[in-house]
Image (cartoon, rainbow, N blue to C red; front, top):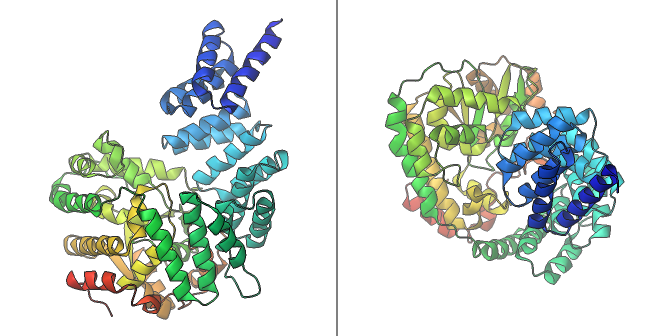
Length: 527
């Protein structure tokens, strides 16, 4: 057998092992091959893919980087980009994508991988052609179809997304992710909804993960059909089922709040060396309080670009802290970061954020709500940064968090499946914002969602003034902004301002009574 045939045979065998889940066997075979033939790019690449499948990401990156130096083909570059995102090296991932574009992968998985990396970097427009090609090459693959539909929805192409999802459900009628995304694309009507289909699929499944997705989808559609009490009952049942599977304790979140408060005096006094002159705009607050709305208002301004919800500040703080804990934020990390070089944190943040924007506009918005925990660090590390905090009626905030299914795999949102957990989280958020108001007077603009809805022009003017931006009429027409939206508010922010969500909690006042009582006991006024 000649060397070319031998190479092809070994590659086929290793890829087959990977396809069957034999990652250890694939790694062993690829390692033998690259030892015998150190110039064989495919051997290094397959060893890297095998290592990644076993969770050895940093080793995998080194192996694939070697493969790329030997052969910079699109498949290798695409996988290198994917692995970079797993270790939050977003700028390197963007560079690898650019290299892959010069010779894109010819296989469906490679094209889907490129689409996924673009999506993780927030460039949904760039992701879509790759997802479309993946579906063309492998039309039976429902995961590829889902990714295409999600990209279409983020880009506001709801009718096309709906068609893509129905095509997916023809292939896989019980696909819970597809049902959940489909339910959220538009407001359902008595003549056009999926309630019967959702009810039947949910009744037939025993998968806890699928029941969660289907429960949220069904509750959303029933609520659209003007039966809020039935919808809330399904939601409560669904959340209780999922909450029972979680190890969540509010005490862990409370420990983070305590640490941030305790470390502020240290952060306030430490010398900041060589701070970045950059002036990003941070939109913070509890989730589902209007942060996406304000992001759209600001990014409609000709001088402003949205970077979406970045993890850049939490990751910059984690890197500066140097802690080895598995969570991005924990008391140990907070205490270590308080002693770190704040100027370096600010500069690291700007570097991380840069790969998520085009750089064509002078101001950038980061709308990760959880940055409210980092307001003290932001204020000191980035002295020219602007900070805006969205506030909303406490009970509407609790209701909206309870009704929204956040990223299931993210432990940050584990509080959102129980009304008392949400109330406790809100109470500590409220206390933290009181701290920032006291120690950083005038630095944070607290914008009330209800006031913005009732007085759009006046509140928009106040917002722009706080951000140091001139008036622009385009900010009043935020709903015509064509930029992608990948948050749960995607459908809402493509409409003009409306009052549908104001005082929504009163529909469920009885069910929410324990949460209301909790807030009142902790001194929070409920209007």
